[in-house]
Length: 143
Image 1 (cartoon, one colour):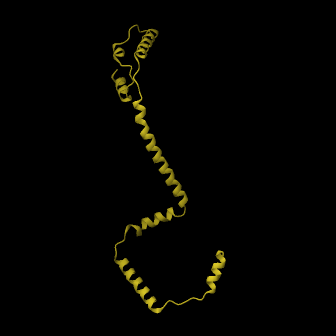
Image 2: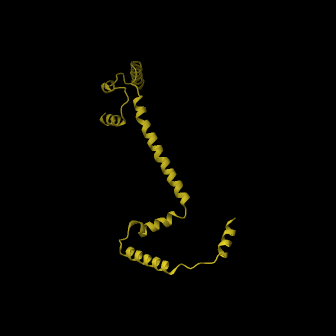
Image 3: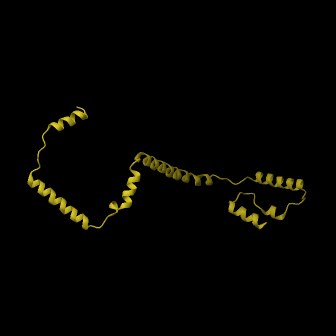
């Protein structure tokens, strides 16, 4: 039985009247409810702002659901990427003594090529260990 057959079957059946006592009870209950609702303070769900929002969201629920999925995906990616950052910092190892000696030799060679025979005292005291950028910027302003 398809949809049209069902409708035709309903049309063939005679309409029955609601018993009078039921009708009176239903109307009395409805009028009591309408009086209670009119005296009750307006709640959040009946406000005009919510009605306006629902009129904006309702025409395209699939688009809003897609947007919600994208936001959930971005938040999840943010949390997963945030957890791996400290692990990368823990794996850093300081340079070996050989690397430090090689860097100092290159600094001396550069100083000779530029024309300055002696390496400044400030350059000798600097550590070749990488430091946070805030400290590097501070050193630049101090020299």
